[in-house]
Image (cartoon, rainbow, N blue to C red; front, side):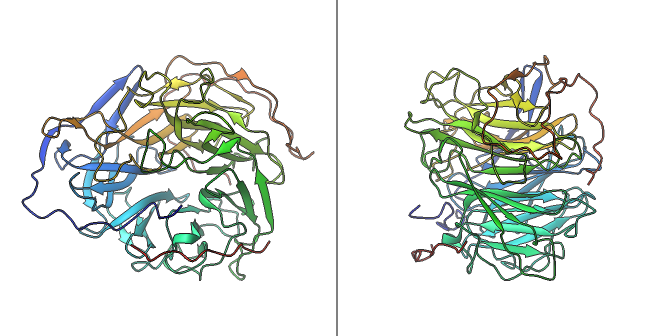
Length: 504
């Protein structure tokens, strides 16, 4: 990449240059699924003329009715000035409240949310003018936030992700781990750790192979795993066994090259100014036969094929030593010009894997998109037939002086389903003559509609299964049950960096 994904490009639009009207908030049924607009005003109405994308979601593991979503908030599509928007729900995502932004009038971006096992929410936000980040905490279900670290005190860079160790028996219980793209860092390095809930952060260090555009998670034994890529066809899973030890500077003792079956795409037809996908890594902490399996998902352009992308999945059953061959989750007939983008995953406390993505398979113009869903109950060996979750929408309208609908969507899974935050353009702005970008919440689950039966796929290859961890057999498809209240889960030398250009 010749330039960062985030740039400080313009000031807020001058007062009086735009007027925000309202319209009824969008509630969009599609079959048995219903998407609810999140970025609404104090009266629960749609704000005509704004824009919102890159939603990140957190759900209270002790009370699934409490949900919060953060997003990039553009008060008007006429300006690229964006802030850290947030909303909360106390009724499992049906009703949403948008109190405002973390710091009104401060240029922020790249929201990433997570939670701990007691139900505290955390919000990592990037100050784009410096590429420095800070952590905010909510102890009341996302209704209000307090800045934990000083402005920029969490180091960070573009693009950043973080995770929280949620296992009570782990030495690093409650620790926060963050990594970012080293080319566009606040100060230096690519990794930092907080041992006090985000209040202070260690001096950054480098990660082997300088991974970009990925995420990280913690196993039940406290081992930290990072999944990332080189902005092309190289992907890695990188492990630290001692990041959980507060008395040492973390080191990385295992680097595994992972075949994801293709390459990362930037600037594709469905998202010209952004990514078609990032690398999402998640660890199973179910305590069952799939415990501590490591999963990676990303949307990639298959080698030597077309212009589109597929959602590809791999798994490791031996602590990241080896990974399976890549498996294509989207099950439509192979058409390498179709786009299956923003692929991501969540792992439930019972071990079920949920995957969602945006998909153009049904679009004659090959850009209109729908949200799709699939799941696996056997550690990724088989996947349920894909289900369309949303109506079709265009991703090519509503751009706030930025030719993209963001760079990612997110999902958090519990034992009966998954809570999804995504951006779409269902609202129409008659003044502008096009649809607007807004943030939506939708609940997906295996029992959310006609229960599909997973179909067997080719047996993954190159996966070593330790004798102490038997390979999971396909399990019965869950039947429809009322949504329960979730319970806490049981619990090489870096390459030289090129000299970046001046910061924007």
